[in-house]
Amino acid sequence: MQHCAPGWLSVIFAVWLATPIIIGQEPIGLKARERRVPAGSVSLYARDVGQGPPAIVLHGGPDFDTRYLLPDLDRLADVYRLVYYDQRGRGQSADGVQPDDVSLATDLEDIDRVRQHFGLEAPTLLGHSWGTVLALEYALRHPARVSRLVLMNPAPASSADAALLRKAYTTQLGDLMERQRAIVTGEAYQRGDPETVAERYRIHFAHALARTEHYEALMRAMRAAFIAQGPTGILKARAVEDRLMADTWQQASYDLMPRLASLRIPTLILWGDRDFIPREISEHLIGSLPQARLVTLKDCGHFAYLECPAAVRTALQDFAR
Figure 1 (tube, rainbow, N blue to C red):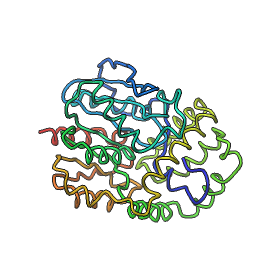
Figure 2: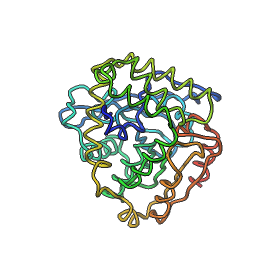
Figure 3: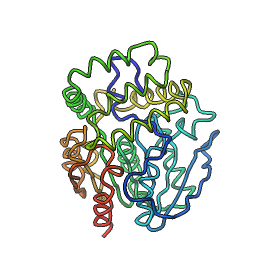
Figure 4: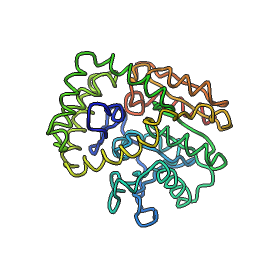
């Protein structure tokens, strides 16, 4: 994550969850399998569960891991065989990795390593938030290796849209923006104090979820996860994110839109009408991707798989048909 006032945009999507959230329907009873995927001098933690067409899950952040998706996304394990992995330098893929070892290029190479390790010719890529940027970047480089794209609560695919998000985010927070800046620039946050980081995220996600019960569950899980992660892990994750932001949104010329016109991959975009990411960002993707369609999820925020699982399931089943 960025940790000074000028760079706070880079943490707009960040959340690190180690405690599962179960709201509503229980996950289906399929046993997950864990393994390690060789990735040069390190290895990536991976987990797969379910049956049906394979889908590689690309988590958001970019400074967190797959745990925030669990167990809620597992409810889709009768629609897809879900292949999760922690991105390089994050979660259980952090051992032996220095932040300088991580870049957009290494993250895209790792997607291909996971694809090959699981013997997948052309899987679906299912990205959430920042993970949608990785999905699009990979598909542009390897279109024949992707059968479909599912972009859930998509992040900006250009520096211009990142600026659009920053403006909307500032407006949403209003007076809370100054309180958040004070926390982010303070000594405790700078040294990665878990309680201070948790306090900051109560503000950060104040407008990200549609329902209070989901927001409070998310906040409880986040606090527990930051405490478990500790200052060293928090600071390492921030440094990894800094590297990825430098490769993407911080470049004035960063813009995937012109290139997306070449992608002939069926694409489903899921956007919640209570998401803190403006609808225009999804509409820009729709206007650029020739075979994309947008499904708007009613009374749903940035964590669609958690907040409105039935609507997500219906959209994915319709897409599969």
